[in-house]
Length: 376
Image (cartoon, rainbow, N blue to C red; front, side, top):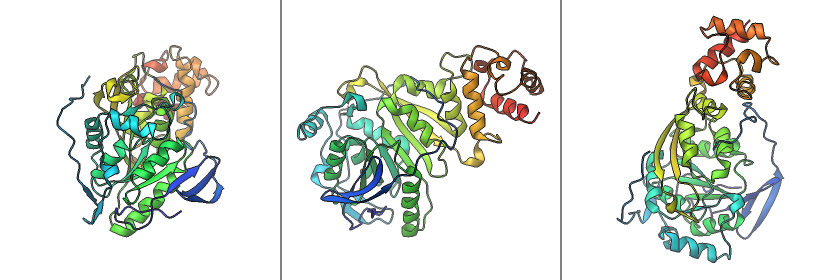
């Protein structure tokens, strides 16, 4: 498929791309040839991680001011249609859904944003600048997409629901700033596709930059998205997610000896620097969920900034085993990987008691212990 490119005045038509068991290029009028999607290997050994689960958003009555045009990094203008510019309040969201005779799907975790100021603050948290390439997961009706485009971004919107993918494709048709992918982000070949777009952008502008992920994320896929994106610091500089508020706080605030300390806490801090930005009242969504939302910004680390371990996959496998019984001593929970005497010797060599438990160790201490026990 031919991408519309980073430059927002590209003359190529907007394409709706579809994939399920195969990767397809699909224009709105028809379907192209398909080729199989390569299987996703667990490159980083993260398959074991399970699911996990203030500052208030200051709402304002002033209307959102969006530019009536967008410009690429070279300052070239492309116009947004009246449909793309339309307000995104509860009335417009309901009308958009009714136009396709559908309702939010609970099994997809669909709760649509109806507060435009939230989208503005999400984009501000991502520090979007003209020419940025942004992957948006679950664009819904395109409310956040519109704010990203208004900030100068080129958006790859990955939407699992074919009805909503079609809606977003129609809304931004002709803008040259939005590529819509109809498919599951967790199965989408993100590395290949984003790398191609970044290379194309570099050839057009001569400027080397990394992409970003920005999403009002369906709450039920939070863990899997975090696991998939954070190890890609060579592609993405930043990820900003609107999550279930409780999960957002757990990701950022969990520490040893807290009830929320778990493998995902260690993964997040291994691959990124997380920051909780603000709380989003549940009334900002339609339909209204049972919980509030929270926005987290992750600044992804480069590989050279990762804690020094010989094998990342084995390191996280060790952590998983340790947390299977996090209140038991490490020499017991890890005995299928290391002998109790080896575990005890490694703990003592890095200044930890031989009775240490997983819930008591920081990320840095886990790294020291792993390096010690694997070098005995």
